[in-house]
Amino acid sequence: MQENFIQKCETIEDTKKLAYKFASLIKENGCFINLFGEIGAGKTAFVKFVAEALGIKEKVTSPSFVILNEYHSASIPVYHFDLYRLEHTGISTITEELREYSEGKKITFVEWAEFSQGELPFERIEINVTYDDDDSRIYSFKSIGNKNTKIIEGLSI
Ligand SMILES: Nc1ncnc2c1ncn2[C@@H]1O[C@H](COP(=O)(O)OP(=O)(O)O)[C@@H](O)[C@H]1O
Ligand SMILES: [Mg+2]
Image: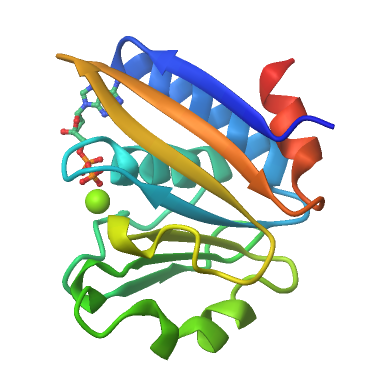
């Protein structure tokens, strides 16, 4: 059972390819995804490419100031949270609301402040994005719970 997958993306084109592959693996059944990494690492860039691959027609923007964007033009609904602004309130205040976004056939991305890592009590995929240099980034995927191991396996094929 594979729980981790790591890929170095030397250019933004590599990130696009990885995101398209990820989209193909989650588009039928949905997935709840947390993204971690410092500002400018490439969390929103990845979400934008996944949205493009899913056929979302609306412009995808960073939800930093609105907390949640949602898109209903693809065959599966896509929700995109940025919880950076919750930093001081803490994630515990909205955990149960987030759980609803992890159920059923939907795709939910949560860009997350670092401090909240590991706090959610339901199955998900965590993606850590780190700088390598210039346009090179490292995307590390981890499945939490058994439900998503097939997606991780799919990435490595
Ligand atoms: N290989 C790469 N993968 C992702 N983003 C890259 C890459 N190379 C350069 N970039 C740039 O890095 C920036 C990432 O910004 P963004 O995705 O908004 O960061 P975050 O959401 O993590 O704060 C974008 O300007 C993007 O074009
Ligand atoms: Mg962002």
